[in-house]
Amino acid sequence: MALPRGCLPLVAVFLATICRAEAAVRELKVGYYAETCPGAEDIVRETIARARAREARSVASVMRLQFHDCFVNGCDGSVLMDDTPTMLGEKEALSNINSLRSFEVIDEAKEALEEHCPGVVSCADIVVVAARDAVVLTGGPNWEVRLGREDSLTASQEDSDNIMPSPRANASALIRLFANLNLTVTDLVALSGSHSIGEARCFSIVFRLYNQSGSGRPDPNMDATYRNALDTLCPRGGDEEVTGGMDATPVIFDNQYFKDLVGLRGFLNSDQTLFSDNARTRRVVKQFSEDQDAFFRAFVKGMIKMGELQNPVKGEIRHNCRVANGSPTEVVASHAVDL
Image 1 (cartoon, rainbow, N blue to C red):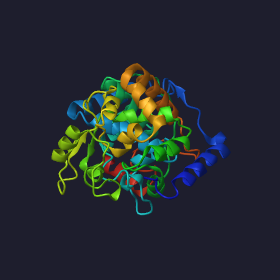
Image 2: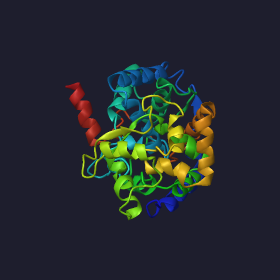
Image 3: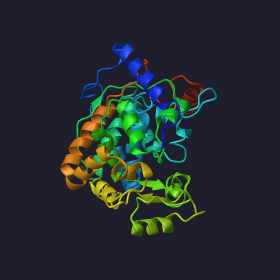
Image 4: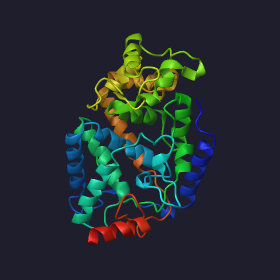
């Protein structure tokens, strides 16, 4: 399925804007907060660990926030912003509504950091650190994150609708989207491996089970035993908010996701298509299914590259990740705390 109309031109405009405004892009570096907020990354990791202890699924939800933030006008914390009377935020965008979650975990980390070093650590950086920690805490690779991002002053539901792919997206559409963000086919497959942890809703797959491509038939690229299990989990006319693991080990970050794709047990169409529909992505899926270390190395490289996507527009360090500083909502919240 093609991406929404206007997606690629919009991405191209975004990248061109970055080129024109190169001087406005901040230099990111490892240890950015070493002097201004020592222990900042430790505070975030402790927060993520507590969230995982409360609910295993939460860390996957936190990691997903980086993708949905960085792909839409760069890693700027815009995905965290609530709607206002004059702005429709990204939380209600087509790919996010009733799907993105665990915003309160980022809030918890931000509150702890504001107590430790007020006004220093951006929400955008918290998202990137938290995504790394989600991987590490579930058994995946560790890496040093480059920090120093600013938070955007606004968000755009329209941009998110135009850019973020549907669960129905095919490999060719995904390759084009990633290429327009300077991410390779290997980056695409490796970053899709983020689905090694977490769950997705029946809403995202009922078309595969009962009406693939409008044919009234199921997706043929599905193992029969797995199809029967999904029929039970997501029956026709059933509760589409029910969730299922995106691979056979949904709380462990490993290469099982790729083994499942090779076995035609991918949960989302946008996952299974990487093996079933495109020779370029199939080759990488097979490699990662056989070599977990290769997957881990490529995943780290892809996460770092994705984290380099920036919004060139001058931002700020938000006090509250949900609202811009000085907005009526932020002022009301501040007065409530004072009382």
